[in-house]
Amino acid sequence: MRKLDKTRIISTHYKRWEEEFERLNQNHDTYDSSNNTHYLDVVMNLLHAQGGLCAYTEMRLCSLELIDEQKWVNGKYVGHNPETFGQLDHFDPELKSEKAWLWDNFFYVCTDINTKVKGKKEVDIILKPDTKEYDVAYLMEYDIDSHIFIPHSNLDDNTQERVKAMILKLGINFDPIIDLRREYLVDKLTQKKFGLEFEIHQFHTAFSMCVYSEKSM
Image 1 (cartoon, rainbow, N blue to C red):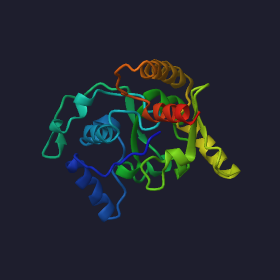
Image 2 (tube, one colour):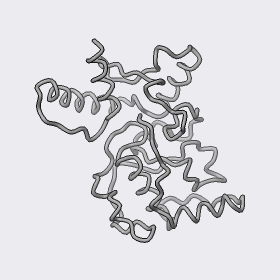
Image 3 (tube, rainbow, N blue to C red):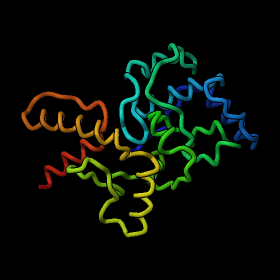
């Protein structure tokens, strides 16, 4: 799960609307999903910031063409409502009742992760990927044999347990994702081994850790 920079706001109509709630210290409008006029702008700005990937698993959710900045005109996304493999997630579900449209609390994630794994579980900010403190190389390692992420062995016991709990809650090692990740990485690592040209379109962190592990051996 790579670090995310969500400071680049291109859906400016939505952001001004959200900031007005915060300026007046008011509760946000009730979250009504796709019925809200700003929903698509939020989703597409998130996908732009996330490179079209799930914020937690790094599985590809949409093509890069859909999130080209030319799709925005005067602070609004003007492309057709795109089909993706994801849903809008409130990282901390406790904020949803009063801060339903808070940009800081939004990520766009794989639908199965949002509905089958994370849901309304209590979260720990230690694995919130847009914080200044978040450092995946410090917090996690990748077990290339089982193709799962694990807490970094250099962490103290308490921090390892916190990271382990959040890896589970965010679905980073969700079984179907493990299979997809393994198949994808084995293919890319084989191409690399034989000096073939290739590009990485998803699972960037796992690939980088696999390469680093190979160099360390």
